Length: 446
Image (tube, rainbow, N blue to C red; front, top):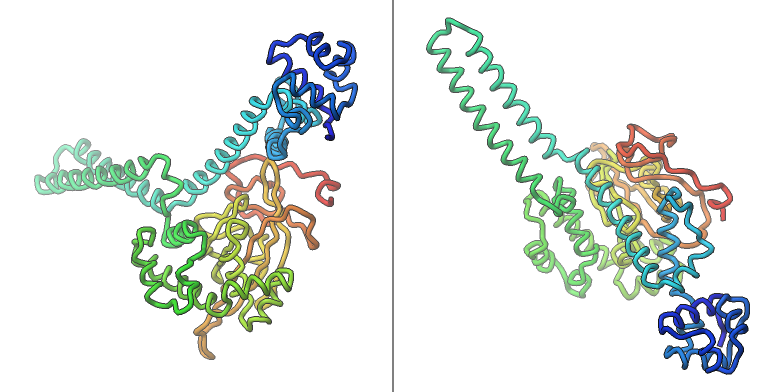
């Protein structure tokens, strides 16, 4: 039974927790107290019968003494240390002693890991709310209404108070204006308060039809099993649009119908079973899959996203760069309004129609994450000889945990909430006002 370098520390912690003296434990297992002291300070390796005897005396399984902390806990501790960014009052985290800490104090280690994950979730929420407050058209319109009503009331009141001899008819007209603008101010203020009083649902409230469509897709994880079944068609699409999770806005419902129809067409052209087998056979190469099923490349990217679960994201944009469909993936923040980062392959593809574009993106954060993104831009159906060509771009997003060939691009979500100050594609200052320190070149190239 192999023992880890910290077996002695675990023996000591178990012994102290039981209130057993070192001499008593040494006598019970047939060794000297001096030898047990060396073991407890990790200066002697043990195994075989001795570790079994010690475990029996301490009332635990031998594996609880020989096995290190769970891999997931160790990863969480290292992630929390990396997210800390700067040293606290006690200095920088001692990463080389993380396993010692987890082995001696598993409860405290789990608490640190949990709080680290909680901090990461709160940071993502702040970014989402910041993006919303910066771009929400409802908030801007409501504030404009309030300011407009206040200005009108102030102007009318100023005329009434500063003008001595005013015609009674004009006086009545100004008073009527004050009353009407007061009611408008009250209604606008009530609407604004109602919008702000959504509590924890602020980040989930749709901003626009596109945002509502994105929420509909996210709830289904961009996978609709009823449309995968043989013989599925308009009836199944209609049922999805009448369900409890369906969009309520008529405009959004029409967008959802078009999206579901396209999904159904992809499912018919590339059945899930055959697609999964073919994907494994070609090692996930979208171009070879497109040739195998005789379909456009963007259809393959959509299919890979729909069958990829949580490990695959998708984003679609029109020729102006505005996102029209979003399937998020953890760690790759998609803006809820307007366009995204100009460095995404999605936008590079718009400049090179029909030519696939791929890159590995490193997204900013306390712990930067990498994603393999593949995109293509193709003309939309329905354009004729006399009509202008309209393009749309589709990008598949997949997280990568190992080295992937190809260029590494330091990108972001959108300039408004991206901390990369020196980015050559930046179009506006970030509201975060924080610089992301670049990783050492040797780390990025590993």
